[in-house]
Image 1 (cartoon, one colour):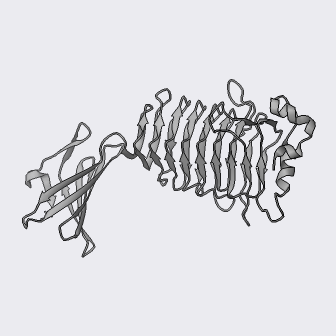
Image 2: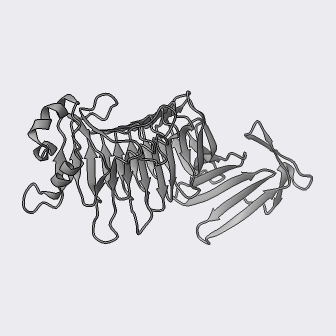
Image 3: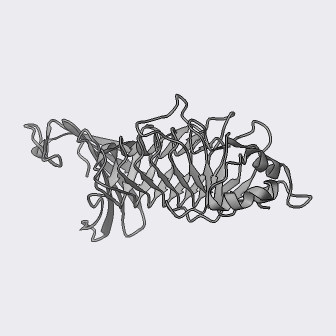
Length: 377
């Protein structure tokens, strides 16, 4: 159904022309309370091209689809929803019993807040869309809200947004962050093709419990920085993401991982970086019996110049021989796995130094090469 079905016909031309002062809040709630056919649980409301004024927050308490004809790119939306200062645009609520608004879909709309030239226009931070339940957001343009463009805060049982999806959205010129994610139940989300620009906080700020995946995202001209990942338990993945150099540095915390992409705003922090240097190598070595051992080597370098080399080696008979070599400032630590006995053997060296952040040298009067402990054959 169309929202225009619940708005007086005398307002239709003005809405299409963008000149109407009609408050559409009650009309949308009337549309949501109706049904497309008798057994429909999930209302679907269409916004034709035009500008729709809302005096209050749109609160979704059941699975709903709100959609327009927008492309998700700034300046190309045809269905505009305008909200006053300090008011959140859309809230997707989670029910402690039942489904709540889980599985809602919001797409093809342009949401515009009211943000003053120097900061928040009120003491209330109004967000563009606030997710407290799992939902799909796609092809949206969200700007000029005093809070976050997209605000995802969820902790069970009050809220649970696990497995949320954000696709092909732009979030720009908001008073806080472009996208903000926080909570122990705001995980396993997939964010693809999002552009976060000119926000007064971070472009993308993730403080979730277990982490989310960001693919092909872009940030520019954000006041505090491009990307931020705070939680030490969040396995955030930034795959093929980009940042322009016209903003402060990104700040990531391990076990966050960066793969591919290009970052004009350099990445800082203690995280797994597979973006700047090749980190996977293969080597073959002949052993005395003539068998060939293949090593898969993965490398990790921490912000404190600690490093780990992890080797998974296998021989011609298919036997797995895992071992790893850890470096901490001042020493090497080697572990060799014996799969049959579930045992690890250890080697320590007396001294280890760092050259150029990577090269290590060892020395010890006890053993050639600096090794002390139990030699491994």
